[in-house]
View (cartoon, rainbow, N blue to C red):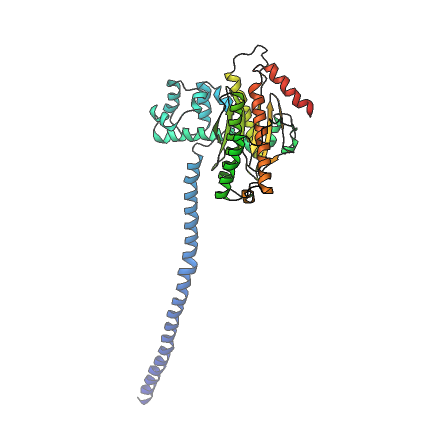
Length: 401
């Protein structure tokens, strides 16, 4: 009995002692679970999910944005030129549009047939005009954007002087590769009324805007360019009695930028002026040559059928940054310029001091540029309109080379 009782007590003691480590183990297990669960939830589970979500959101955003950008973009491998598009009939135009994958309903292509829209008319269409023909806002904007893109692409040669020069059989991509010519200036008196007014206006602008520096903006440069052009035109009007005028010419370029050229004309286009960029002078040369080609075609269309039928013509071009002035001679199939001998003007506040050396230098250089502009304008105005007369005049320049 005694033994049995002691044995029973011993069993209880063993059981109680075995229960205590078991409880500690449970506590440890609980603590381990907490320590393990936290990194599992934060480090292992959430981070990969976040990465996947970010990647998915990025992909989702990119696709619609790309789709939006593609609307109105050209799909063809080669962009047709403006001149090519102008020759298209309605059928050719529709075929081209269908190849662009614009996502338009066929009823809109039928509208081009019903309205008898050919390539020439197409290039002049606006979003409002398309809507008036039955186009909804979305399709009208797609077509309008495509027209803008076509025009931008067609003027891409502005940015590649090499391509422009190759058209005239000139190898290279430098303005120094162009043959040189020496324009004939028209001498004006040092006390010429228009020259005096021009110098006064330039000095007044400098007193407000300060010295024209290499990093001065295009707007400031344009102020001086226009002042000099106006002075030259007034002098030419006085000498010739002709109604010479100047007007701005908007040029379509790549995104974000619009360049304003000027054209001087009398009964026909005479000179094209390009406001050059200080660090992109080759681009400005290319742009001026393209514009001269366009003005040449304009003169040709306006001109009556000439007797000789040769269609020979010539025009002058000017590329100016205000401080540097380059003159170009554009004739049928040939170009020349003064790229190796630019005319320079320094617009410095030191010129504001009357009778100073710098003021005399400013006056001398402005007068020199004006005399060249007056000279080429008078030359172009006085020459007979016949192609033979123009050709004979240009040959004198070429003989001097």
